[in-house]
Image (cartoon, rainbow, N blue to C red):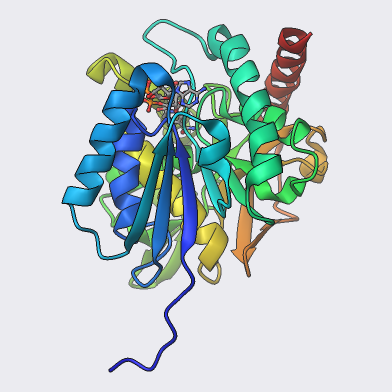
Length: 336
Ligand code: NAD
Ligand code: LMR
């Protein structure tokens, strides 16, 4: 007989749960991929009325899968009911970018969604609720959510760039033919868009003779400064072109990585990329949600400081920051 106290149940909200990321994500959460194999969860799933029937279908499947950690499912089209008491909110609901569309095209639709969901979370979520925005434009949706939920601490509102981070690890692993788990400390700077800057200047690979810089092992600056960067920047578009749908399993898996590391901590000596509210570190404009390298401990993220930034990186970091300032202005113009 186990003498360990059972962990208190954690309520996890997934908005847009009837969509394709939702369909990949909810079983991962119910299996303990996000919060660990000993953490019971109650899933709150929100979608809009046209998707209600599909949402209830997902609920049936969750029941049918008999997940031992899943202690309950709330499936609703009522945003207030969805938000009551949630400890973690994964905001996937929104209007996805389709082939040929730019993120800006979907801005105004998403701004109004994030404004109203911010108010519901602020009023009804558990104190200290952690929020991850996945829906695009992810950084700016997170900013709108932050602005309209002023009582949620700004440190609790983040957006997903872990997918880009993982894509960068994947590209290095393929190029060097090494295990992806042996590659670490890439950085995604800036926006979850094609202006993001995937930076390998601090990244290393574990080898039998110790950790080696990625730049030294790849020994091809033209590839690292060219094709590597564009492949990561354009990966979302490449997947849309190939699947006629945006990435789903990799987005869901990366959302689990983001929350797991935030709640349970990053491994010693390792950082990850998260879109967080800029405090002006690295001379990034403050007042935007920008992806930085972060370490996490005790449920809090901290921006990794004092990385050396060369002129090439500076330019790319500034360009993606400028795009976010522009997106912020566009979002505000949609509000008025
Ligand atoms: P999808 O269209 O399959 O699902 C979206 C779901 O959201 C739908 O079921 C829809 O009914 C629902 N929805 C719409 N408005 C809603 C609202 N107001 N409240 C609740 N639910 C609402 O899309 P998807 O492929 O699952 O993608 C979801 C979002 O994630 C898109 O914006 C996509 O661009 C984005 N995305 C982000 C990343 C990232 O790395 N940050 C990666 C992939 C996709
Ligand atoms: C992705 O990165 O796969 C998504 O954000 C899809 C997109 O809109 O590019």
